[in-house]
View 1 (cartoon, rainbow, N blue to C red):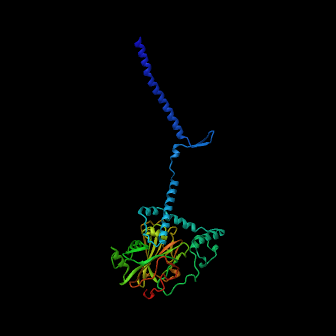
View 2: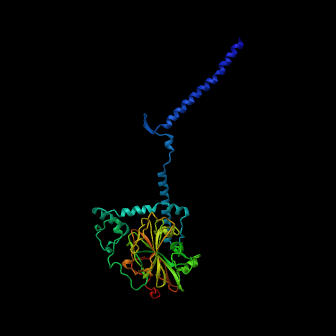
View 3: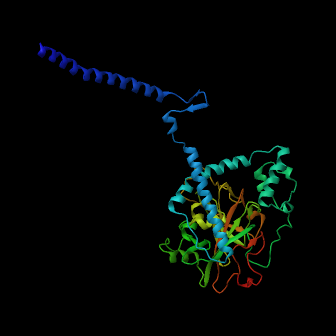
Length: 419
């Protein structure tokens, strides 16, 4: 009997864990269902005796917010760049020379990934929209105040005359506003500021002090002429020899920055003949002096129109470089040119020759004549590039010199008889 009681007790005791485990299993299942229901609940609020409490699901709490992250990162980067510029200005005040800090490849690639061509086309469409008569004065007055436009030089000073922003950008000047110097062979082709001037050495050109770019990359190969008496360039010296065909001459360049408030047309800087036009589709990055100090070969990345030909000393070239919101470059004697067009892809170029069977010489250009106008619809950079001068001539031009159209980009003591 005792043994039977013992076996019964053992049976009861052995049944306890199985009952307890089944109870725990049911409890865990209920708890998991309850937690899953809480996970699926949206943001809600409930009242307590003390205050109103908001609760959110864990999924909501850990969700990433890309827009605030991008804004915070971009703001921090812009703030860092502004601090760097402030520090550079302070060091310049102390007379210390600051070596240029160039952008890395990833920074240039990131900048080029911005759809500046599409944005510039959209800006061009916006410029064509006719403004209401009552809105013209406030809009143009804001632009004049922001960029320091001198409307007293405009042929029409009445702001209501300009129907849209494009007409205002392409406003004409009074005849006496830009007298053309007749004492110099080379004059400024536009209003603007000289970013750099000097002799081309080793086929490298300074876009600003300390930052260079390749002249061959900028102009492209000299293979468009069918009657070239020499093979394509295979080295820097051979490319230079293709440009400098007269013994004793050297190549000089001049980079002029056209600010938003300046007169927005270029004219011929000298008497010469245009034989060829080359259009480089490219990016439309900003070409202000700060960007020119930051991005190496900036002018080679951007869209540009290269006019090449000859003057009395040999090779001569005039190039208009596009910029942000400046995709439209018009040459009045070249109706086939269409810049910032989606049919052209980056990394290529399109050639057009003005020399035909009926015209053996090309298009003659006269100094600052109306027919020699190149029009842009916003800030731009004009590069009066690679014109030949005698080796013993040293032009007296300095950087950051402000110029007006028709005035010589040279100091009064410059020897004009050598040009």
